[in-house]
Image (cartoon, rainbow, N blue to C red):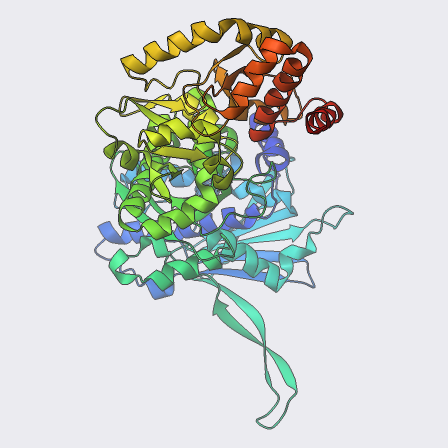
Length: 626
């Protein structure tokens, strides 16, 4: 029996496949089971067009047979088998897809689609086996054949007696190494785990003889082991069932069985799409964030299946970062079983699926916000920050998708409100959406800068997350209403009369304020009469794009670049403190300097900003007291 050589390009491809294509060796079993499923599918298709054939599904199955003594693993199927010519064509030329050719020749379109690609997937067996032996007999032949290969050196084909139609593939496992345990692929529990992980939803039974225990007799506490054949896959995936057949409990059980999270999901989304791209998906909105969610260790992604066979545990390409909290799976018969991560990044069909999934998630979240506010707020408490990061990231590219999902605490409603709800309540004379930023709602409530806006009866949104202001700066407006901070240099709410009065006051005090600005040189860009203060003596406002809260956030980062906001010290000329300040300006230069420094440091403390020289500040207080 002469050994036949693989073609040169096939040798190279075999080497690349074994060492590069698959990152996890366990997928070899997925590939062989998928090919076995294909072989049974081919009989099914033959029966559709051949009146002399019947297809009794009970006669068709796949069997996994480990042999610990021989260190072999055999995968058997009752499928269509192969002739000598098909062995030569399908297994002699690597990447020659027998299943793909069959699909094209028979114009298979009824959804009972073929998942494997004979050739590439089959050779994954060499990742774990020194020798692979295939015994097969075709439905169209009385003669069986054996194909055998020890790798890239070549293969042999010889006739054999084989009673039943179908194929048996036997892998002689490699010897164990320090960093590789090949014995795991003949361990019952490990094999069951791999089958459940990758091939649980293959439509034919995958059988295996497993070890079980039972009491030695009715009155005994001792157990004895026995062997029993059982089907180890569930066969019918939940996502292929009609929604009407399923209960909420079914979806929760699937969530927990797949270990998507330790919590109970807030919402499930079951969708079927049959158009330019065909896929089924079950998506979950978790109740709580994983412990590592806001860390570099967190890995996003959905499980990706090709016609019931798991391709990838976490397909990151199916979810944008701002929806990275979503768990679940997608199954598409339009995707190749052997698609690589590099190919996924450029796959047009995957891009279409991702686009549809994003649209569906947004629809469901908006529906939850509208119809189940309590549940939405629970979701937002866990993942709202991620939505706001999504608005800010990529230069605001996703702000239109996310803006209607945002919530902020309201000064008037005393609860979380959406931007749409805020705008719907705006008085006719209100031009801007006002907000205030701080460490907590309680701190913001006490900010001097909120006094005038609140006095006008305008609602204020409270920003307490470090990302809030950055996101809003990127959003810029909502429903043609511009966002404006209560600490902004110009609130834009003065009447003509108020503006005229303010200008007169500025002119009246300009010399004193110019002197204060000089004393605070390098610390503030200006000192002026405050139009926003009512009961407080002093506050800081800002000019420019960088706010006081943004300054804090940016300077707390590891690559601190000492970014500073353009601070303006505002003085309330109707406060008693002002009169002391004015008297000092007129009579005592030293006291005037003391008061100026105290007011500036007081304004810093109100904002939660550090005082540059705490010792000097406390000494100044002592001087005032003395």
